[in-house]
Every structure is written in C-alpha cells, then in structure tokens.
Image: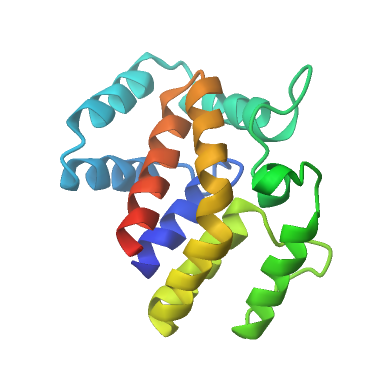
Length: 179
C-alpha cells in the first residue's frame, strides 16, 4: 500500500516531463488493468491517443482544477478549504493535520508548505502504511475522509479531462480499502 499511496501522491503533483512520461503512464494503465477498471483504462488510452500533447493537456487541466481558474479554483487540493465549512487556506484542520504529522514523527520539508495539501497527506499515508497501520486508519478516519469526499465530488463534477477523474477515484478506492 505504501507504494500505491506514493504513486497516487505523485499522480496529483503538477505534471512535469521528468516523471509524467511513458513509464508513469504505463504504470497507471497497468494499475487500472489489475483492478479490472477496463472502462477507465480505455478512456485514458483514448485521451492519450487523441492528444497532440498529452502532458500539456494534463498540465492545463491541473492548473485549471487546482491552481488558477476563473472565477475561482474548481477544486482546491487542501483539506482546510473543504473540511466542515472552514473554507480558507491554512484553517484549523491544517493545524490539526500538522499536529498529527508531528505526533508520528513526520515533518514537511519546508516549514511554509501547507500540511493539508492532498499530496502531503498521501505521502503521509504511504509512511503510515509501512510503520503504523493503526495510525493510518486514525488519520484516514479523522482527518482525510471528511474532506476528501467533498474534494473528489468537485473534481468529478468539474474535470474536463479523464486523468484527474480516474486518479481521484483511485485515491477514493484505496483509502476506503484501508478503512
């Protein structure tokens, strides 16, 4: 599970040519195949085949969904924005998340990084999968799933590209499996 959570964290980073390459895409398609998600696999293959530049298409979608869109970001990847009406960056849930990280010996590389970003939470779940399965379940139940369901629904509703719909559904599948 640690490798899967690490892979999903990478899948939610801004797509860069160094890693969002044929190897990464092949692993994603293989994962979908192993899960028997044929419809999603075919949808992704079709998007790849039709794209003049698949990387650029996913970069544009990433920016639109998670960074900058008019009139607002479609699906901000921060728990604080979605969790129990907090609605702001670095709300109370971010502090709770940071406190939970510290209690398990996890710190962010840069102190000014927002701890409740989806990528960091998935990386944390990868660490817990290896070292603390009970802590992983506690984190999933108390801090991750209360906001992720809202985020996932926004991505599913707002995404124009199948890549992010598929990835958030994979995150949903694997986090529910761990609970």
